[in-house]
Image (cartoon, rainbow over all chains, first blue to last red; front, side):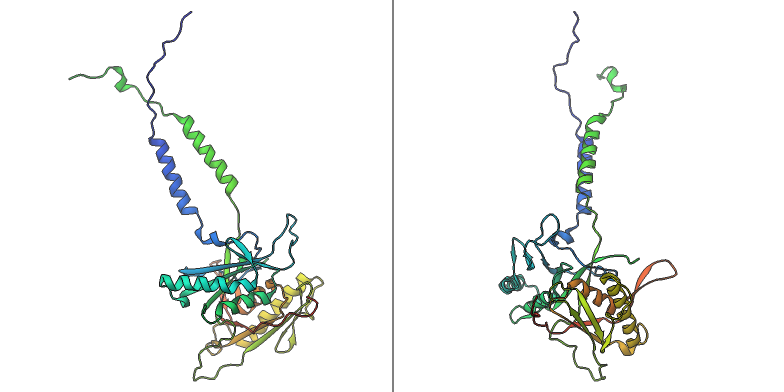
Amino acid sequence: MRFKKTDSSVPDIDMTPMIDIVFQLIAFFMVITNFEQTQADERVILAKDALAMPPEVKREDELTINIGYERDQNGDRIDPDPFIFWPGEPIRLDGLEAKLRLEAQIYKDEGTEISDVTVVIRADAEVPTGLIQGVIKTAQKEGIEFQKFAIKARQSVEQ
Amino acid sequence: MKFRGKNTTEKIEAQMAPMIDVVFQLLIFFMLTLKIVEPEGDFTVNMPIGQSVAETDSPKPPVIKVRMKADPTTGEMYSMTIARKELFATAPGTTQEEKSSAAFQRLNSEILKAIGSPGNPLAEDQEVELDPDYELNSKYLINAIGACRGRLETNPQGRTELVDYIKKIKFAPPREKQPGS
């Protein structure tokens, strides 16, 4: 029987094309990744309105507050009362003041003017309006004093 | 000088297999992670609760008050009034959706009546105060802000643009919870 003579030396792998692609990818990801919505919470189903427009000038400092319900797989509410989905733990309105005080302090320590920070409220379409007003009122309290507010909505084209 | 043999003229074949592997991996990755979301926009609340614009010498037009009432258990709107004129209960339509959509259109035209014409310099200081019940679902609040804010119009170039009505939208102090909510 005849055997082919095998080359015992390891063949050189050409890394160039792979590196090309990997770099392409990294560039692609950097461009496509939407850092703005990283603070968005999936549990919040926003209300729709045709006039809701993204801000023309990008805001420099934003503090996003998500308000919504804990829902099961069918979309039914597990808890009838809405939560504020603070990063890490859901809280109620009465727990918000302490969190906002801390947040305001962090901005102050960083040297950011509180009047430049926009509080962006992402509220579920079924959240009672009084709660949104309560959140704004809490954020305006003495010692916290946020001044700019915005309410998010999904942009929808009206038929 | 020494030259290598035949090898120099031989064409090196590009190995396509690993590249295709990677490209397919990528394709699958994007297909799985792609999430189609409608773009999010927002409404700026220019004058939050308890604040008012700085006093100016020119007399300010009276604030337009929009009162919205909601069912305490469901949070659905049952009444919307602007200067005591009912917009919701008398709106055409049978379902809640139809009625509220008609009511917000009426609110939009009432606001236009109040300011005269879009961009009217006399109406620049015009304020709208929204006074909703505690339980009102926030979607109605968003729609009310939208209706006061302006309307969308398609210009001759086929682009949709915003026609401003009122920019100064504020909230009344929050109401207490209604019994039965």
